[in-house]
Structures are given as structure tokens and as C-alpha cells.
Length: 185
Image (cartoon, rainbow, N blue to C red; front, side, top):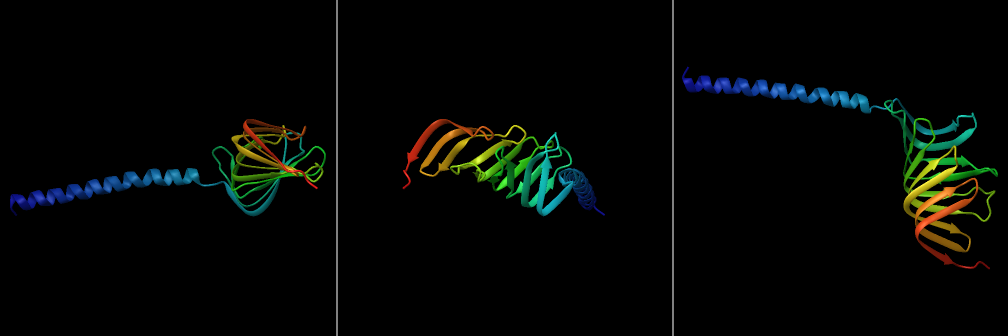
């Protein structure tokens, strides 16, 4: 065998060894990250009642898909519908494209086409819509830095930034507030 043949054989062996080394180094982290990303459990077409620290209903949650993450014990949701109890009876109904619930259930984040409707016990009926909303069930508070549209019979309020105390029925738009008033008959 000539020196060129030996050199070619040596290069072929070196390429095979380096390819094998790269392949084995690459596959180990992928398997570890997949194991960490795997959910504790999944729920499909579910209804869940969450209790607060005093054992009272914090919220009712319905949806087509829920994943609980083992690392931080949070829940990720697809198209959730939350029902938060109102002081005067009934429930605030809030829907969104996605949702997230903290490990303790003390914070709920709704994202994408969020719509909230007041309970039937509150008159006049109130609806607000935004792209994101953070809800704190134990304190009955909600807030967002995004644009919010509040609709009531005869008026539409729109502004940027929103804070709501759902127990006291106090709502604050923080900036760029516009009101359209249309009297009802």
C-alpha cells in the first residue's frame, strides 16, 4: 500500500471517530432536556375546582388541555375558561387563548384575546377585553399594562393599563382613556 493509501485510510478513520464523538455528545443533552420538559400530568377536556389557603373556592377552571410542569409546579393551559367567585354571588367568567397558573394558585395569567364578563348579579352587565390579564384570585384583583376595552350598556371605555378590584367593583384605566357614550332607549 502506498503512503497516499495509508493517509486516506487514516483520514477516513479520523472522520468516522469524530463523527461518532459528535453524535454521542449531541444526543445526551437532547434526551436530558426532553425529560425535564415532560409534564407531570396532562388533562384533556377537564373541569377543576381550585381551593384557596382557607379551603374556599378560589376558581373553577375548564378547558381542553392542561399540562403541569414538575420543576416549578405551574400549569399551562390551552383556551381556558376561568370562573372566579364574586362577593355578591355568581362568577366572573374569563376566557383566553392561553393561560398559566402559579404553583400555589395565587396568580393566573391569561394571554391572547382575553374576555371577562361580570356575574349576572352585577348590574349593569360589564365586559372587558384585552390581550393579557393577570388575576390574583385570593385578593380578587386583576391588572394589565395592555389596551383594555370596557363595555357596558350605553358606553364603551378604552384605555391603556388597567387595574380592577373585583370585590369593590372599582376599575381604573391608567392612560390614553377614551369614552364613547351611546344612550339607550
